[in-house]
Length: 471
Image (tube, rainbow, N blue to C red; front, side, top):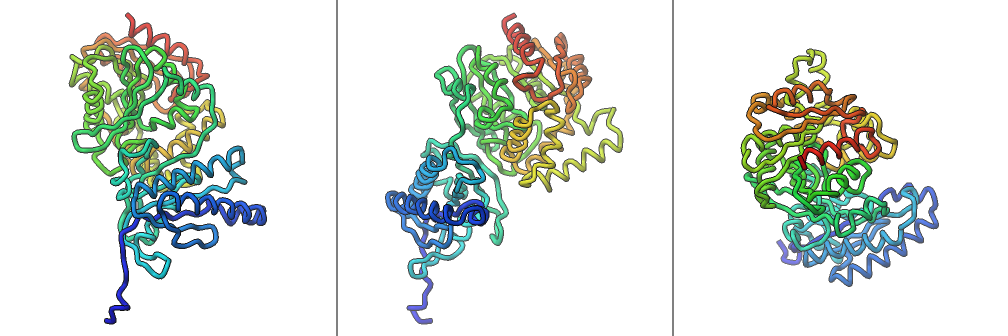
């Protein structure tokens, strides 16, 4: 073989970018779109050069660039998205020209000034799953930049990318600004400044947890749909969290496979979730504290309280149950077939851009939600966990049976349940309370399983909790 024919390769950090919905924007206003793209490309060129990168190719609306450092590449992408975010501020989603960016570190083939090969292909596929205005990086890049950025990085788990033989571990960096609301202004104040930190469970799963507020501690166990940041930004849990942090130092976390914690395919079980809770508690270091459990988080809270009665001062359980839907005596064979069909549909439809399937879940969890709240929760479900994690969570929770733990609880317990709860009937909450020695049961007005700001029982909930904790 002629030496001049030898394929030249090198290791490089690659960024691949293109415009989300470019063809649609061209069809709406060709002249303005082309002029805007030209202006934005000048921003790309300047920032790539400023961060030590080199543009390898530009075709249509796409940009391909290389960097010697993964950190330089990611910092460049963040600068680009922040700058373009300012340029598009105030524009509607239909008219704004937003880039998606993928970043990968790998071998590339050099062909003149252009770059080819697997490293480029992975970066391009990661760009394809990035949010408009967002950045998607591979696990290799994450390993290089972990702990070196102020931006939160959300794990997306293993992704099967088109024409890539092996699954790629992916992470998302979202740098788009959101409208400021009175609630987020409160969060930004000194009292409600959230700190997101990380620890690891006994089996190595990385868990994201946060501390917010002032006062005596209140530890909230994780439930199914949690995201430490989106919980504050979207109009679902915001008021609930503000009410809890008003008089307490609120500690909460994202469970494995959920939110900002690892999205891997590790064990999903009640024991694993309790181990995660133990890891967070051991990290924050409180010796004795009250626990708030919500929905399936009640089972986690109960299990922890039975394991560590010396550390738990009070137990508050909202919307919980001792028996999962697969195990309840009221479940008919037809019900069981329907529940299992839902699990199958989760695997098939959870990540779809069409929210029809997720809306079915929203209608059961939030039957009295406003249109804005329902849309926000539909989007939150997709962004909080993968389809596989959603199905595994659903199946695991549906098989819960903690009836044997209830008589072992030795701490004061308050059980609250919404009377019209569609997802978890109030009878399940009553049965759980009956099994706990000395537990007090309170029914709340309303129909939503997830407590919303204007729910008729919201104020009563906070009053009952504060009275219970102070008594």
